[in-house]
Amino acid sequence: MHILVAVDGSEASAKAFERACALATPRSKLTLLAVTEGAVASADMDLAAGCAEADYFVIPDSARAEDRKRTEKLLASLAHKCSERNITVNSLTCEGDPRAIICDSAEHLHVDLVVVGRRGMGQAARLVVGSVSEYVTRHAPCSVLTVKH
Amino acid sequence: MKYMVAVDGSSHAQKALQMAYRFVGEGDELVILSVGNFQSNRLREFFDEAGVAEAKTKALAGVEKLVNETMEHAQSRGIAKVTGKAELGHPRTVIVELAEKENVDMIIMGARGLGAVERLVIGSVSDYVMKHANADVLIAKGDIPVESEVIVDDE
Image 1 (cartoon, rainbow over the protein chains, first blue to last red):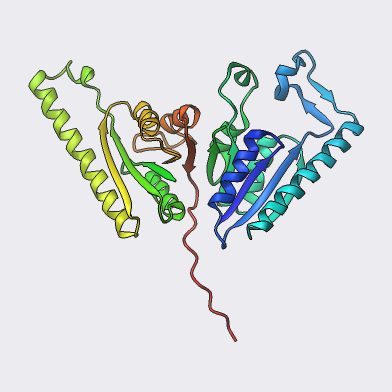
Image 2 (image 1 turned 60 degrees about the vertical axis):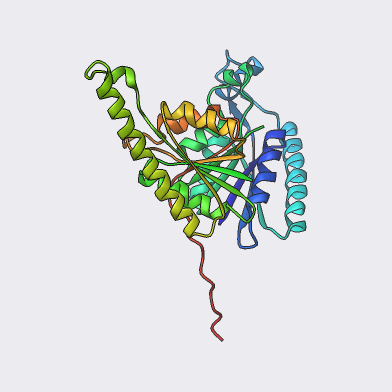
């Protein structure tokens, strides 16, 4: 079974990763997918940050480079955990909208199961337009496991 | 781990069951749940109490039959700890509440059910459970991978 786990350094995705590893068998393959923000991010994605007035905001190159470095470290550490448990693993980084990227990756890589962390159910979470896990559950071409916090 | 599969006789629920079989291992428990969408208040507009009671008995019998058949199927696949729950009520609420009561680790269900509109990517029950359950929720859809056969090397 090919399992894709969306990771972003959050506790929710850490739990998702643990769950994916627990479900993996010696014949499974795990793909770790980290999505970082691109050069131009849509304000839709982060209303909570108070950017509602602009249509978009630009992320400086320096911030993106830092983001990429942090992501690479995260992926390396998670891949290492997989190797320790004898789980076959691939890592992938992409820039852009996580919702679309996770679904497209699931399709192109012929994934059997996508594992994502579920956002907490607090009020603040609801302000962000369209949670990633809800979008992915609806639109992924395969089964989706949402892991609770 | 304790898994719960919600079934309703649909092909989507079959996918959920197939996924469950891929994950349930030795020592794990599997709960088969089916909820008959029975709303006595609506029926009371057309039938008297005796009629409603009769309808309720028939509905429950149907749900129990499905649960028992599914349990037998699971047991024939070698799963040792299988229990069944046949309930009547609002499927989405019963699934969430029962999962909580039974301390289920993961709910597995189809993306849609028997009554769903085809163009919906995800039905209202699955959507509700995904958002409100206190357990991990696996929505089964697409092609379910089959257990791969052992490939013999060609020497």
